[in-house]
Length: 136
Ligand SMILES: [Zn+2]
Image (cartoon, rainbow, N blue to C red; front, side, top):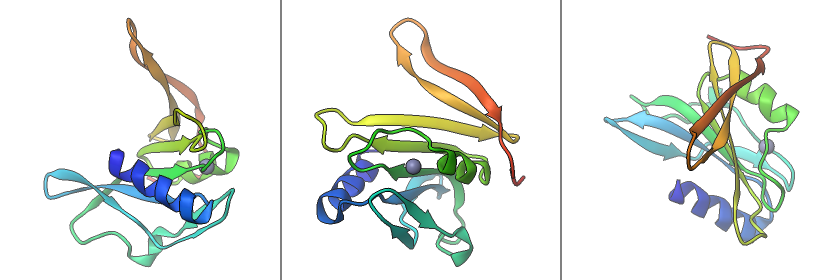
């Protein structure tokens, strides 16, 4: 996670834009891939059809930054997430002392929003809604 956040912070400092990385499983471990992407201060777009994934890797998640804005899944983010059954993380508040995080998992076309763990209850998971356009 630190590598992804460091990348997001560097891009935000240099360009004041969002950025995205992909989480892949490769050679018995997790790794990050930075896809070719088009970014602005309020958006990031990439196309997985471009062959950005290394051979032998499996895409298991996506992460993107919201720069200085709050970390949450916008309706566009939710639509994008629906296309991939995986873990999805948004990082934001890069101008604040503490970063903000938002996370969800899409499984079997249902999006589960992950809530921050409390000391007694552990990680909270709640289904938010069935996604549309889910590819299996
Ligand atoms: Zn977003």
